[in-house]
Image (cartoon, one colour):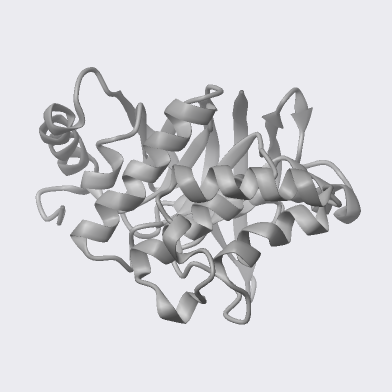
Length: 250
C-alpha cells in the first residue's frame, strides 16, 4: 500500500511564492489501479514527481511498504526507484538502439538479475502484453501503442511495488490508447500490479478502481468505480465537469 500524507509544495521564483500542493492526502491500496485527474495547474505532475523522488516536497510523507520514500539520501532514493518504482512516460522513453526485448532486459541487467531469470521474466511480459512478435524489432519499427506496451513491460520487469504513469495515452490514438489501458488492467489482474496514473483522458480513467480529482492544489474529491468502465464513464464525466466547470473537454 502507498499512502500520501499531507504533501505540501510551493515554488519560489524572484521573491514570489506559488503554492502548488496544499496538503495532499490519498491512499493507493496494493493491487489497485488509481487515476489522478484535474485541470492544468492543479498539481498532478508535481505530485507525481514528488512520489518519484525527482523533486522534494516542502513537507509531508509518501509511505510505500511502510517506508517514507521522501526522506532518504540521493543514493537511497535511486535504490528505491530501481527496486520499488516502475515508470511509464507519455513519450515512452525507450532506447532506440536496443530491441524491444533488450529494452525490457535493461532494468533487470542494472539490478543484477541472473540471465535465466531475466529470460523467463521477459518472455512472460512479452506474452502478457501481446508484443512477443515484435521482440526483436527496434522502437522505430513499431507503433506507438506497441512502444507504450513495451514501456509498461519494462516498468514491471523488476516487480516494483507500484507503477507511476504520466499521461500514458497522451500521444496515442483511441485504438492504441485502449490497448495500453487493457495492458494496465491485465497487469493488475494477472500479476497484482499497483498502478498510479496521471491523466487527462476520461476514457482511460474510467478503467481505474478509484479516481482522485485535484484542483488548485487540493484533493477536490474521489470517485470509486462500481461496475463496468462503460457505466462508470458517464458518472466520471459528470464528476470532472464539477471539478473543471462546464468547459471540460473529455
